[in-house]
Amino acid sequence: MKPTKVLTLIVWVVPTATAGYLVSRVTTSNGGQVPVTPINLILTLVAIAIILAGFAVPMLRYRRELAAQLKNSATPRPKRLNPFYAVRLLLLAKATAISGALFAGWHIGVIWMQISSPVTTASIWQNVGGLVASIVMVVVAWIVERICRIKDDGAEQIDAHIAKASTPGQIAGAAEKSNR
Picture 1 (cartoon, rainbow, N blue to C red):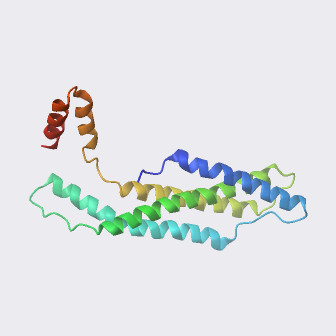
Picture 2: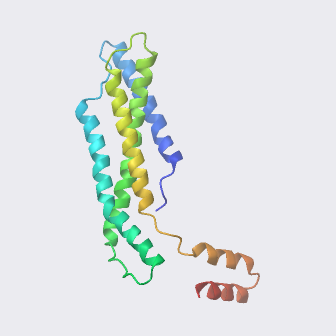
Picture 3: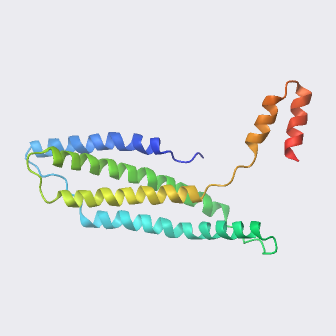
């Protein structure tokens, strides 16, 4: 699975910002109120970010202990994490980043509508709080996803040796040489 790119998150933000703007504009033009982010949503988004960071602590601890073991070979190798745990954490981080981008887009659209309207109410601050909580959720998820990455396994070096080789015999020799 490839890491989440910032461009991917922006692709999710733009349509939801447009939807947030249009829904709030249509709602207010038909006599309704501007959608306001409730406090419990703000607290929930922050809680999701904190829980995700808490789930990443064992992975971070393992990476730190492994780096210390590589520097000093006398220290014992740390106990490996369950690979299913690592994959689940990675998937949770990716899903959290995308859902946080959706929440951020919605809040951007609603705030955009509130700023562009002739009267700005005090409810804009709750929507700004929702936007900040969404951004915190995206940043934490993006960092946790980067924590779950593993180092390069050398596949690019094999591809480079194969690309330099011109005959099939050289290709087999290059692949064998890079595996040593």
